[in-house]
Image 1: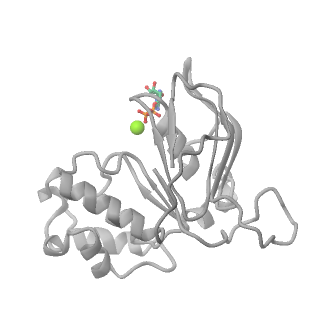
Image 2: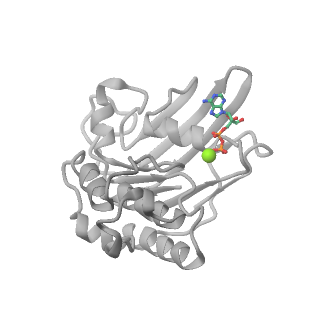
Length: 227
Ligand SMILES: Nc1ncnc2c1ncn2[C@@H]1O[C@H](COP(=O)(O)OP(=O)(O)O)[C@@H](O)[C@H]1O
Ligand SMILES: [Mg+2]
């Protein structure tokens, strides 16, 4: 899932290298003809979509459809084979601007990636340190419902509590774009509702629509994109 804040991205304006910034809103994410293979596995084939600012956008599909691969390419963790990708005005495949992009991105990976011996507060504080304008850690603890677990070791959290921490790690940097991979897997119904409320509140009431992606050449493999 991709969650974009409103406001013009501060990076290079879309498709206008060297040109003066346009006041018109540009998409937070623009993907065209994205293709990625692992050996003979066709993981992502000619996919295109746009995520507007202030929008919550979900990639839906069965296991192996290529969701994680697409997300990792957007985050700059994985190189694409073909296609155009623009995230907040940056090409995530470019090493020269990767730091600028990462400062603007919040990432919630499919698997928790925190040392188990850190406390919840230590993990959040460390992540906050990677960002120029982080949210206060106490505010994040409350937002994700881990206020009473601030001093607990990560390894002692339940599965659902670990996902709450993941969400906290994603938002502590106050990112312009939050990217979440399977964000509510393992959540109980209450936690799921709270997570969605949090996500909605972060966009200031995101619009809902059923728009189709701009290009969609493999509907069988990866059938649904939902906003
Ligand atoms: N590092 C990798 N090396 C080889 N194949 C991979 C790798 N990562 C993913 N794949 C394959 O690419 C396809 C898409 O995987 P993935 O993007 O993880 O899908 P999803 O997140 O939608 O479940 C799958 O067939 C998967 O086995
Ligand atoms: Mg996945």
